Length: 83
Image (cartoon, rainbow, N blue to C red; front, side, top):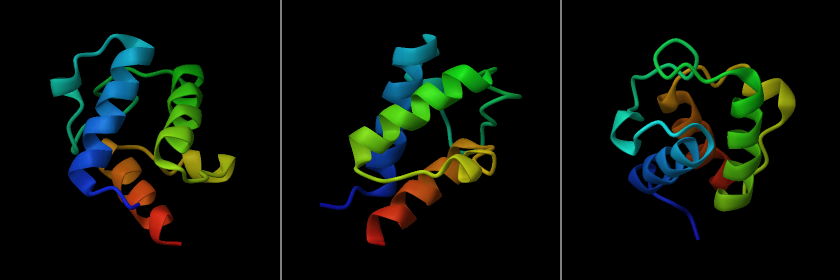
């Protein structure tokens, strides 16, 4: 079952909140994980692993560096579901 972009965004917001304590409403598409949300690389890897599990996708390590904004992650996850 594929998730919609809104469902992926909501799920990512929950994962970010669980890992960092950042309020889910602050996790918005235009936000940068590092610059706006201040998420370090270790927390980001945890979020990626949890997102892989939650959305049943594989995010290769070399792709993680390309996930700079929440929009990048939502687009990657929704695209990866179709593959």
